[in-house]
Every structure is written in C-alpha cells, then in structure tokens.
Image (tube, rainbow, N blue to C red; front, side, top):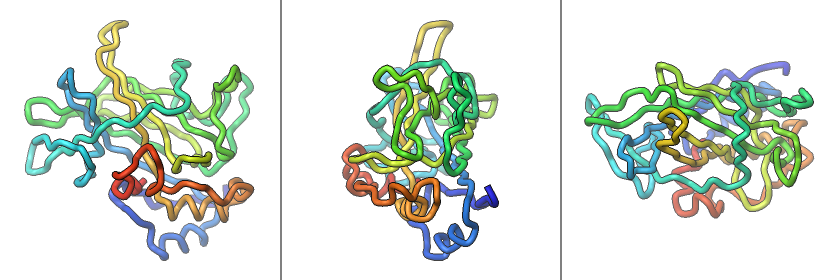
Length: 244
C-alpha cells in the first residue's frame, strides 16, 4: 500500500464531509482505523452492549457511571451469517490459517474497548472472549457450506484495560445488507459460559461508496443495493447506527 489514512473514524460521526472524501481520494490506497467502545451490563438478565460514545441509540437504557457521564446501553443485533466457533485465537484475521492466503483489501485496524457496568461505575472488562467475523472484499464469508476456508474470523481475549485489537480488511458487501462487521462477546467461569452478547457495527455510507467506486480492490462491485438507512437488521435505528 502506498499510503495510510491517519485519521481515526470516530463512532460518533454520522457523515463524512466532502473534505473527508477528497482527503481519501488524494491519499489513494489507505488504511482505515476504527475504535469501537462497548459497555456491558453485569446483570445476568441484561444482554445489552453500548457504544459508550452513543447518546441516541434506540431502545437503550441509561446507567450512571463515575463522573458526570452516562452509559447508554443498546440492544443486541442478530448473529446473522455465519458464526462458526473455530477457536482461532489471533489478532490478524486476514489469512486463511490452512493455506496462508491473505485476503485482499484495504487494511483495517479494529480496536474494541470493553467495559462493564457495576455499582454505578464503568470499569474495564478483562478476560472476555471477543470474536469478530465478516465477509471479504467480494462479499463472501469463509467457513460456509462445507468450505474449509477460515479467513476474516478470529477472537482475542480482552486485556487488563478491556482492549481487544484486530487487523483485518475493509468489508465488501452482499445483497440485502449494509456494510457491517459481526462480533460476539463471551464470558466464562472455567469451561462454563456465563454471558454472551452478539451484535454488529456499521460503516459510514459515504466512505463505503468511495471505497467501492474508487479503490481497485473493490471496483468490480461498485453498486451495493443496501445502505444503513435501508438495512433490515438495524431498521429504524439505522440513522443513528450509520456512523461507523
């Protein structure tokens, strides 16, 4: 890659400006950096996660935190296609572990910051299993219909700061869905699973349009049929969820 985009794509931004898009075009091939903040309720009955920067998620409940800020808990989203518990403990999920073939695409640096809500405070959630999986630049998932390929999937365990980081590629698209990445968070006591949360996050439509129409690794399929506003999974909350 001849260059990198140094700007971090903030989860709170709903639109890319014309200046942003011109900046992407000027830099040519790019790396994209995404930081995803999650907040997990400790209550056994609560199966919700929050983007802690989100102040308008639908169906959410507000929990107090330390200081003057608040935590907005948002509902889980469907698991969707195609979770397979391959137990691939790795931070770089681009390769197929069997063949070593690297998935082609714009490099994506993805960092999850996971916290728990307990006793009116938000603290890092350590030791949590965080799986991510998504389609490649052509809209294809691995590990489907008997396929032995296992690219673009894996997990990390959150560290002492509640952080799990991955290296991947910018997702492609497939019919009926906006551009997204799946993730699943699990907690264990020994070998017994005590908590599971599954959701997805989404990318700015302006950025996706630029990628699919201008980057040579994606231009063979430029005209996706679904945006964040028309995606059937995020539905009425799409306007608020379309910032990633």
